[in-house]
Length: 193
Image 1 (cartoon, helix red, strand yellow):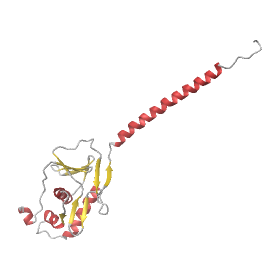
Image 2 (cartoon, rainbow, N blue to C red):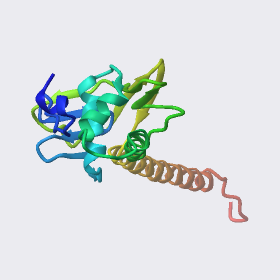
Image 3 (tube, rainbow, N blue to C red):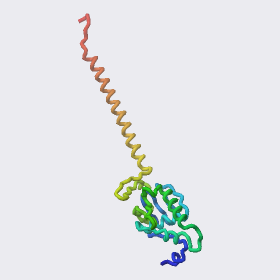
């Protein structure tokens, strides 16, 4: 056991890579910030520490006692249960998660919490175009999309408008040709013949 954990002092967790990615989120450990699609999420210190503790456990249960030891020293006199609940709920709210249908954080009754999505560890940030993340949780498929899809949609709208204009021009030319052809083929009838 580490000396800090033995005394119950809060400690900073340092995972093996600078960047940690899960779903549409990216953690930059050096800057101690979390982003979603390039937008920074505002996570308070303990909320950020809970997220790192969950990532460190990677699918294993993070017990409430482990959270207490990481976040509050033994000398701190607070209602640990209420503070752990509040901190985890703030993290869920920041991630857009719920305890009823968890995508990221699952509550393990009477034990603790578990990160249900597999994080990726990288030494470099995710490219700006990496905006779609497939998340599979208990046999469910859900795709989270961000700002890259409007670019594709705009392209298809432009192509569709151009195709409609060309089709209209061809239709107009065809009707005009038929109209003119109709008058060219009519027999000339008159008294002079």
